[in-house]
Image (tube, rainbow, N blue to C red; front, top):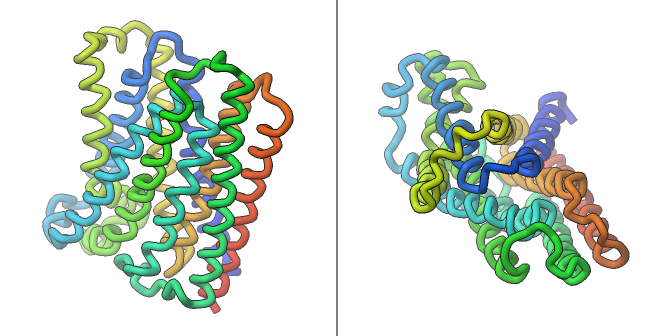
Length: 346
C-alpha cells in the first residue's frame, strides 16, 4: 500500500474520531442549552472557518466559483440540505438518548447509502473512475457495509437494554423510542455530508487551482459552498429556538461555555476537511471506502465520548456486551472496506 493511501486511511479515520467525539464539550456545560452551543459551534465550524480560509488563501475565489457549473452547486447543496436536517436531528438525539447510542445507529444507516451511491452514480473529479458496485472491490466494500448494519442492530438492542436498566434516570430528554426514530431518520440523511463532497469537489477544486489555490485551501473552498445550504439550516434552527425562548442573552452569561462551543465548531471544521482530503488520497474508490471508514471511526469516537462521560454508568451485563460487540463489528467492517480499496488499486 502506498504512502498516500496510508495517509488517506489515517486522515479519514482521524476525521471520524474528531467528528464522533467532537461534541464532548456539551457535557461540561451548565448554562447553555442545545440551541446555544449548537448555534456557536455550527456558525464557526460550517460558515466562519471555511469561508475565512477560502477568502484568505484562494485567489479570486468568487471568480473561480462563477466558473463552476450551476448544476454541480445545486446537486452538492441538495445533498447538503439533507445532511443539514440530519445534523440537527443528531444534535437533538445527543441530548435525548445520548452520544454513544446516537452515533452507533446513525453511523450504520448513513454508511449503507454513502458507500454504495458513488459506485452506482459516479462522482466528480477523481471519483468518476470508481469501480462498479458489482466488481470484486465493490462487492467487498458492500460486505463491509453489511457487517456495519449488523453492528447497528446490536447497538439498538444495547440501547433498549440500557434504557430499561437506567429506568429513565439517565440525564436524557424524551422517550428512547422517539429518539431512536429521530436517529434513524438522521442516519439515512447523514450521508449527504460525504456525497455533497463526492459530487461537488471535482469542478470546484479544479476552478480554485486554476486561479492559483493550493490543495488544502481548495478543499476548504469545496466545503464553503457545497455545504452552504446545510450550514444555513444548522445556524437558523438554533437561532429560531433562542428567539422563541427569548434566550439570546444566555450567550453572554458564560464565556467559558462560549469557549467550549467554539471547540465544537473547530472539531467540525477539522473533521470535515480531513475527511475530504483523506477521501481524495485514497483514490477512485476513496469516496466509498473513505466515507465508510470515516463513519466506522466516527462511531468509535461517539462511543468513547459516551462511555467517558458516564452515559453507560451503572449499566452492566447484556447491554454492555451488545455494545462492545457492535463496536467490534464496526472495526471489522472498516478492515473489510480497506481490503476492498486494495482490490480496486490492483
